[in-house]
Length: 204
Picture (cartoon, rainbow, N blue to C red):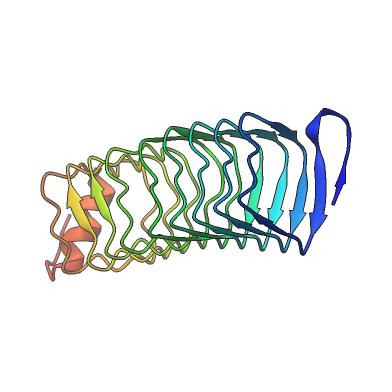
């Protein structure tokens, strides 16, 4: 691993077990194919960093802040994001398994092709986030805000909806049949899609 001034690091194929980088400024660090095992990344900050095909097993990203950082094709297993902030980040193709994702602040970004099966996403605000083909099956979306999201072809199989806000979201190609909406907010276009998915014939 090489390190530059300001805490920026570059590593490929390395394994970081039990490292304590609490509060470190990692700037535009680059990690490719690395594994972080039980790493303490609490209050770490990144800006324009890249994590490609990395695995996070256990560990904490609590209260960490990431601006314009990319987590592409990463796996997060039993990883905590408690109070983390992700602004304009790209998480394309990343997978979350048994990870703590709330509370968490998400401001824009591209989360297309992410896998968050069975995740508790209650009360999180994903407004404007691109979630094309995201797998949210069996996740809990209680009071989750998905306003203006691009959910094209996203998988919502067996999701638990409760006062979920979909207003302005693109639901093109989403299988809406059989979902229990439980007070969720929809705009007129979405309401027609839901009605048609339920077998209704909508006339003008």
